Length: 303
Ligand code: MF3
Ligand code: CO
Ligand code: CO
Image (spheres, helix red, strand yellow):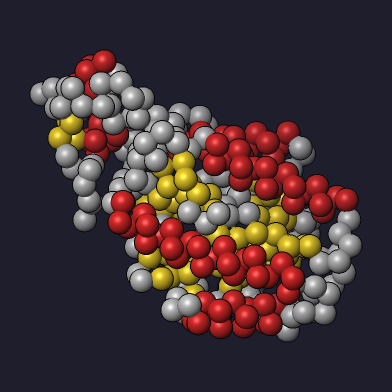
């Protein structure tokens, strides 16, 4: 199932798998051999990475697959941009969902959430204390609400997943600050994405920024690998420790989607089996991008 280049043997004179730009023999080769990854001087990128990480491995995408995901992501951008003028007082979350659905279909795409594990709608609309997976319906947006709209487009078999916060009318300074810090949390997480870093570096950066501002990071929902399926390996927690977890390798595609609560992090799921709300009733915010690890950093596929 895994694609090249991660099954390609890595020679001593090849560039190191970690993306340092140094030759393998000058960089991680000695360490990999000592770790028992190989009795030879050659290991595959996947073997070398697994030397530090013993969980499920990510699928490495080809250039063609990455371009497919980028095209799906471009539909998301168009949808979320189009919502800015449509989200206002008096609009129902159902109307938002209907518009996203129709636009998606009109460009030849499919909303990934529609029918996903029984989920009934084309978007998630999460208002105020709703953390995520709010189901669009009769709820009318009111002055002062903050709402996350999460869209995932399937285009030609490729998935792009992103979400943003929207303000309804006059929003309190406290709510605005939560939204601003949450946006910064996503940016700080993305800034950690480069070969040589680890999934744990992303979570650590997000957690530090949220907690420094007196907020908490939701534990129950994580980012995820994505591309040819909605949810792929690995999971991307928005909390954690530097240097831990899956190594970030060129060609990995995943989402980062921090949910930040004004109060404490525990959540509760409503009777509909989807809607997650803060247990303490405090406000929650979320932003999401789909990103790809490049040879020297990161590229946002939903920007
Ligand atoms: N971005 C969210 C996720 O990755 C969207 C979930 S949609 C739902 O899980 F269908 F699962 F609700
Ligand atoms: Co999403
Ligand atoms: Co997602």
